[in-house]
Each structure stands twice: as C-alpha cells, then as structure tokens.
Image 1 (cartoon, rainbow, N blue to C red):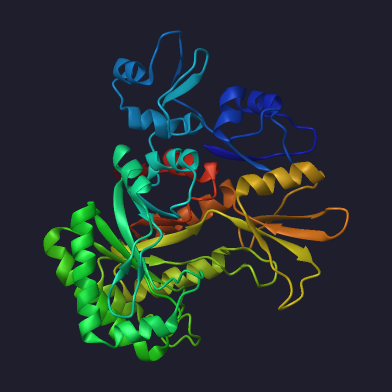
Image 2: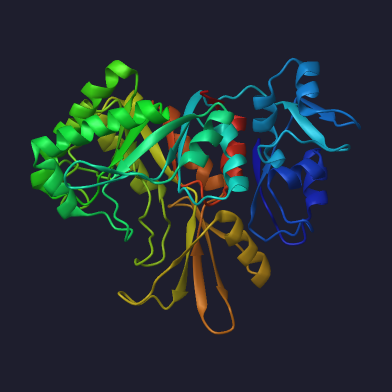
Length: 424
C-alpha cells in the first residue's frame, strides 16, 4: 500500500487512474461518503491487490472463499467495506489476496463500552485478537460490579475473538477513584476476595484473559498494586488466563504526578503477563489543542518501558479518536469535544478547509470557523497510524491495544491488515 495526499482538484477517479487501481475499491476501503467527496490534504490508502474477484449473482462469501482456497476471515479482513458481514452483492469487487505483509506479526486487542452499536462493533471484530468490554467496577470490600457485557462477549465469540474481562476503579460517575483503590489495596482480605471473585466470574462467563486498569494511584499504593497484580496472575495462570495491566505513559521511574507515581513499571511488568502502554491523551478534553498521541512522546514512553519490561510483553496503546477545540483556548473553561477520524474528515469537507500534517507530532490537524467560533481539530489518519504501528516491530513489541472501538477508524484496520500478519 501507499498513502496518497489529496491535492486541489483531485478526484477519486483521477487518483485511481494515477495508480492504476480500482476507483470503487479506493473509495470503499477508505470509507468515503457516497458522493466520494474529498478534502484537500486528506490521506487516502491506495492498495495493490494481487488477486480480486467480481461477485456474480447467486454467489456467497463462503463459496468465494472455497473457490480460492482462503478463509472467510481473510476476506472480511481484506475487504473492510464488508463491515464484518458475510453478505455480498453482485458487482462488488472483492480483494482475494494482497502482497505479503512486511511488518511482521501483530497482536491487536481493543476496548469497547457495552453501549457500542452492534454495527460498529461487527466491522472491527475480524481484526482483533481480544475484546475487552469496559469495565467491571469494584467495591472496597472486594466485590464486583458487572458492566452488562453479554452481547459483546457473544459477538466476540462469534468472530473467533477472545473475550477478556476488564477490571478498573472506575465509578458510576465516570471517574477513577483513588480512595476506593486505597481501601481495597490496603486490605489483604478484600484483595483476596476480589481475586477469587475475578477467577470465579472468568470461569463462569468464559472470559479468556483479564485486563486491569487502576489509575490515579499515589506512590504509597505502588507496591500494594504490584502485589495485587501478581496475586491475580498466580491465581489465574493455572486456569490459562493471562493478566494484562494498563500503564500510565511514564518516561522515568520517578516521574511526578498522581497519574504516574503508583505505576511501578518494573514491578507491574514482572507481575503481569502483558503491559498496555496508555500512550494517548496528551491532547485531551481540558487541555490545549495538540495531537492526542504525538509520536516523539510515544517513542519516549516505549523506550523507557522496554528498559524495565520485556518488550514481548508490551502492547502499544493507540487512540482511535481526536478532539475538536473551540478557540481561543481558555484554561479551565475550554472543553474539547471527542470525535472519530471519520467525523473529523466530514468537518473538513463541510467547511472546505485543507487538512495539514504536523511532521513532528506525526498527526493531522486543521482549523475551521462555524460562523461563530473558530475551531482547531487534531485527529488520526493513515499516516499517523502507520507511524505508530511501525514502533511495534522497531522495538520488538507484542502488538497494539486500541482505545476504543466505539469510534470508527477504518484506515487503521486497512493499514494493519495490509502491512502486518494479524495474530488470531
């Protein structure tokens, strides 16, 4: 694949002609609007299939897979526009095979809120190794608060994706509770009750792994938290369940701030089977406009992490979203709105503005005026995704963890499938 940046006056037809590819596939794989409208500066993925097939009347995806000796799963992965469904229509052009991926193996896990629309979930499941419905809550006494994730668990299984249990200190108000974590982690009895409750629930509901995300822990809870993670692993390992811990994006052992102090990378990495680096939210709801996941900062976190955690345990966190800020930014007043990459592109087209690209942050952005206020938008596209994905083979990491699947980012999955061998 190659990435083409749209110039003034270009169309899907002219770009397809330039590369000698199908304009229909070009539009479909990039999930362009029905009128194929483009924004200047927009990134388009151009793929070069080895073999394609045009669907005839009466054919099914299963029959086409048998005809070419491939799996239905591979056809779903090669053709994002099928949106995870096996239904095909006469005249559709399907990608049967692509060039051999050069990026190596990639494990992809993804978080999703239980409220995620089924259509949104289905089109991303073919690319995942594991799905983590977010999240079970906890009580200070070591009890569990279930998230109502039965639909997500069943959907994951239907696509051959491992459903994992997610555990956090998130409250019903949507905040991570430091007092709750302290009461739990400093009580050996409560910790043991929670470990047992987790093991029982995983066996009962058929989860295949556990992801733990306790955030905003003070330094005094660093050792109790690492002990808790190690206890979970000792209890779950005999059952065949891996334990993953989510880590704040640190760059040094003694990094100050409550977001970082309670996360002892070395101790947590030793206690868990996997470690997810939460390498996003530099640009965030209450902060000034900037990239959500700027590459230099991400790289520094990775370099520190792999100095104290075996790289084959590490998953790189990747955002599937951006933010729209109103200008001028006022600290304590401005509240950015989260949006998907697709929504960002729609805004650029609607207001006729050109998309720029920050070569340092490796992230696209633009400004527009809605008639009342000026806005600045930072988001993700094929270029930013490709830059971050390249860190996985470069540093010998295990794969990536996506936060979160509720917002669609089609180009990420097209890039993953084109350049990497996805671990089943």
